[in-house]
Length: 53
Image (cartoon, rainbow, N blue to C red; front, top):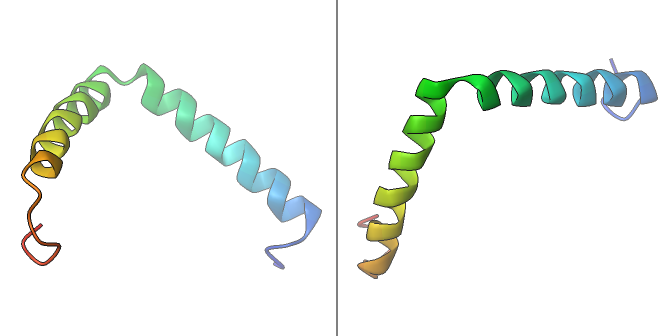
């Protein structure tokens, strides 16, 4: 299927919406994202070279 076709784009949009709804309601996923954000912020504040990150 051509990825630029209107049908493909509509299907993609619908699937993204469904997946966003599922992850928004998943408490374990939300907790994981919150913890990852904390550690990402700490890592960014260390100003390490890109190779070490």
